[in-house]
Image (tube, each protein chain N blue to C red):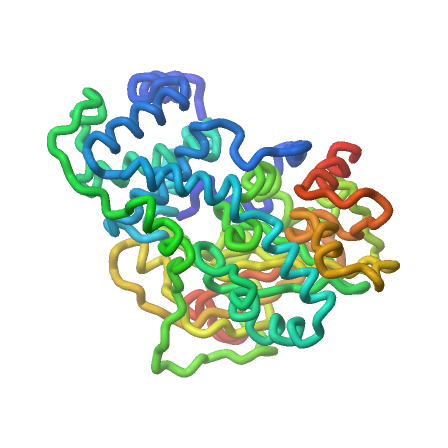
Length: 225
Length: 219
């Protein structure tokens, strides 16, 4: 791209789009509501759903159930969509689910190189890093370097199996159950499972720290890396 | 299309921007961008594949300059203009020229999300490939939407899963029908995709339609 091209393009951009996306989206929302194209109660409901109700706690319940209930694990292997629906998680961006299990020999990592496909029904809205150019570009070609940035170092003997979500199949990683958790309840186990562990950017789930509700633990590891 | 969105394997984007205690939405406008995009899809004027292609069609320099949800909004505006839901004049004045009735009310959102949009279809065609079969991806460079990334074209892999028949995005995005065909998970070695420097153990699995595949010995 030449400098001239860039400045032409910038001018065109400026002419059509206010620089502040907040103002631009506000203006658009106002127009769409006034024209009767969107119902503001639907907008509020959509935002509240993904901000409050559908998120990684759903997936954590699936993982904990798979750890505790061999019949559920079999069902998950047979038809993950149906097994996950039996816990009440269905619908948008979770219509066709496949669960992929980490083992001592295999580490699974999920990406969408073409856009941002992600299992919304069990993990909610993807984090910004999942949608970033760097993750989309690098997860398939240098997964071990990407994992290092998340604080995960893998032995050479372990296969990294990267799942590029090129269709409507949505992948949920089932991490290995941490040792020393044999006496923990399913609810307590679910509290250990982080979002990143279910994407594959975390591998060994620690049990010696306090159980966290959100994704803080995985993110903290990222920061430390 | 061989667009900028097809990023798998590119260098030069720096480290992954990991964020501590990341909120679901960083700003109110990002939440609105998501919600407006989902709500406008309820008009049924475009399908999910067309909607993805609308983001891919943003010119490469613009695509890279925009943040994630800015891309959503830019693509949404283009789709609404293209389908006559809004006019350029309305966009500029901010004043609607008519009043319509929204297809999605707040009370319907839960049911709509729980229903989703399954894309599996029953077809009469017998799948050509079975689990364990070696396959090769075609070498194609279509101008339209495709879900066969550049990094996996003309590469040899093995079928590891048959998902049944699914709507074919390349056709559906063009409005030329669902053209469902068999979808497979195909595993490639990292070395097949990236060359001898890749880790010997590593693999990449892609979900690929039969239309993208040929037998290992087909010319």
